[in-house]
Image (tube, rainbow, N blue to C red):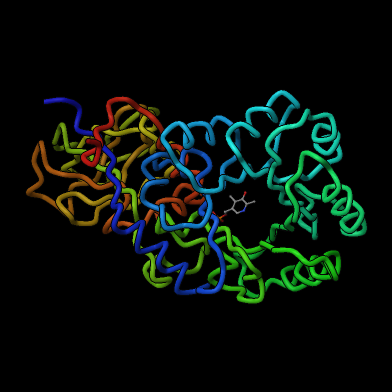
Length: 361
Ligand SMILES: *Cc1c(COP(=O)(O)O)cnc(C)c1O
C-alpha cells in the first residue's frame, strides 16, 4: 500500500460555487481568481472547472503561460502586471490582459515595439495602499494609457478593498466613494469586488467581480461558515490511521513531549503532516474526523505524521479514514485553531508528489 495521504477536489462543488457568484451578480462579468495554483487546488484543474467564468485572474506570467499552453482561450488578467520589460513581448504573444499600477510599467509599455495591443486594467489605490495610482492621478494616467500604442483601448479601471471581509467596516464606503470620484466621467468598465465584497457589499459590484476564495467553497469571513454563504468546499485532505496505541496518563505525545495524556487513553497516528500542507501551528484540540467522527489533534503535527485523540472513537483501527478538512470539516475551523486564515492553509497544499488525485485521468 502506498502512503495514504491524499487530496481530492469536488469539481461539481466548484461549479456550484461559480453559479452562486452568478446568482449574486447576474449582470456582472466574472473574473475567476486562480492565482497561487488556484489557491492550492491546481491551476489547470480549476481553470477547467471554472470555464463558465468570463476571464481568469493570475499573479504572474508563468501561470498564464500554463493556461495558454493547455489551450485556455479566456481573457487572462495578470493582477500585478509585468514585473520587467522582457515579459511584455510574451504577454503580447499570449494576448494577456495586464493590470498597470505603477509608472515603471507605463514606461515599459511605451518602449514596447509594435505588436498585439494589450488589454489594460488601470489599478486605483482607493485606500488600501498596496498597489495602484493615487486617485488624483487616475484621469491623467488613464488618458496616457489610452493614447499608448501598445494598449488596446478602452483602458478599464479597478481597485481593491482592504476590509470588505469585515461586515459594516467604515473604510469600505470610503474606498468606494474615493474610487467613484477618481473615475468620475471616465466611461469604461470597472471592477472592485473580491469574494467578501460579493457576499457583503452589493454597492461594490460594478461591471466585473473578482471572486477567489468563495469559488473554492470557503467563507471569507471569520464569523460565518461556507455553508451559511451557500458555498460547498472543493478540497478535501485525507489520510488514514497508520498506528493505534494506548498511552499512559501523564506521558507526552509527539516532538517536545509537551502534550500530556490526561488519562490512560487510545491515540492514533495519522500519515499526514506539515510536509503535506497541514499547518504546523495547529493547536491541540484542532478538529479532525476519524471514521467520520469528530475528534482532535493532540501534540504538534510533524512533517509526515500527526497524532489524534481516539477516546471519542474507541473502535478506530489502523487503516481507518481520517479527514483533516473538506466535506464534513470546514477548513475555516482548522484555520482558526492554527491562528491563520483558510487562504494560507489552502495555498500550502501544493505539489507533494505522493498525493493521489482521484480525478486525474
Ligand atoms: C486575490 C485577489 C482577489 C480575490 O480575493 P478573494 O478574497 O480570494 O476573493 C481579488 N482581487 C485581487 C486584486 C486579488 O489579488
